[in-house]
Image 1 (tube, rainbow, N blue to C red):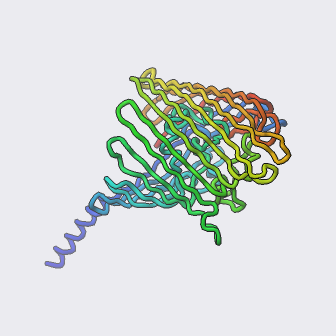
Image 2 (tube, rainbow, N blue to C red; image 1 turned 90 degrees about the horizontal axis):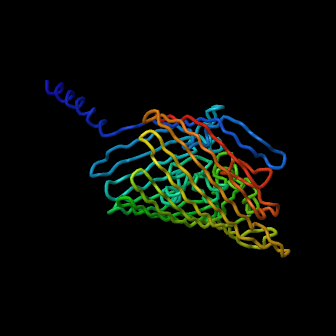
Image 3 (cartoon, rainbow, N blue to C red; image 1 turned 45 degrees about the vertical axis):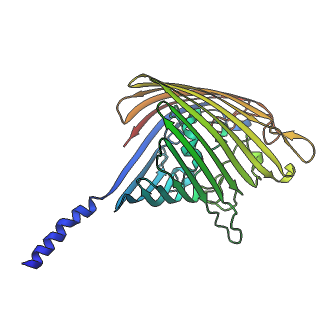
Length: 391
């Protein structure tokens, strides 16, 4: 009888143990019809396509979980992959869990420590103040070529990340990416740091990121080539000429202020490609980006947004004395987003961009909204009509 009672007690205790753990499946499907008036370079033209990877939230599915270890400590994990709804393939260069894949520990007051493929500090502390990061719009609101990675074009492999708790409105974090090169401890490595202050209607943030040898010949390594297929972050003439850079860095700051139903954000970022080889003779390319966005909730179901972005690239001297890369980009974007429910909305957005100057390749600068592709000339226009559903 005692054995039976003991066994029954253990069986009753099992559900209590599992009640401290949870696993959540989630996803976002963001599918739209996209029109680009001028794309594909000198041989391109108009393009109409179905698209599920360039929306306000790129389509994805994932799972996140936690286990209570006691004393405010939890084991946590996240596995998340992008989805191309139109052909069923994975996004992020066909990387299965291309958006995030990490495991770690989290504490109620001490913060969290995680390891795996993760976002950098630009995402957490600078992106929220940019036009795309403030949920104003999608690729149409992205900085030209996503040159500062505020549009999450790339993630960080082999990353060790710490995120603090909230201390009187202040949060901060840091991340280090282990390069993993045999015989070269720092090769393909990088780090980023950031901090944020939010109190009432005001929020402020700043972040810095640095990566050594950002381009790698080995697919899945290096910052620009972090996807499974090794696709390169420097795809278009805006920055393709700087693929030989031995280092890449971004420093930026932003601010946001909310007045009733109106949210205003502004962000600045400085981007540098250092140690340019070949004909550049170790020169450095520098860009400055300025972003201003307004988002207004006209009704509880209707959001309106508009943004202006200006990117300036400084000229870079070649070994023969010529200068390239003196380029300028002006971009405006607008959005209307109607919420059918808490989980489903339809939105329409458009953007127009004009480029001037000389590109990184020495040719006339051409427009490049997000990373949709080089225009045949110095202007480009994109419209997207989409349906988004969260589950």
